[in-house]
Length: 119
Image (tube, rainbow, N blue to C red; front, side):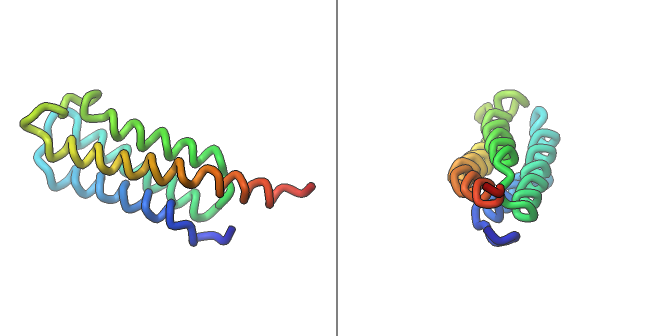
């Protein structure tokens, strides 16, 4: 697997960037800004690590966990109520996208890791 070519990681980076940008644009409620900034930035970093070093299976699981945390963040951060659906929906959508692409990338990452290990 070539570096910087996996579409799943580019999508995860885009989801993280969308979360970060949304945190700065949407009205802050609860802990929305902090959670969206931190989790979005971590998604961007994990995507870049995955692109630079394909075959790191553990990083795929980390990326999936970050997506799951972003999905849960509106409830954890107190911004899932009806008045703050903008930030909540962005967290849910970005988190779901990141989770799905991370799960899709696990098998190819395992194969790349297996191919890279000498037998």
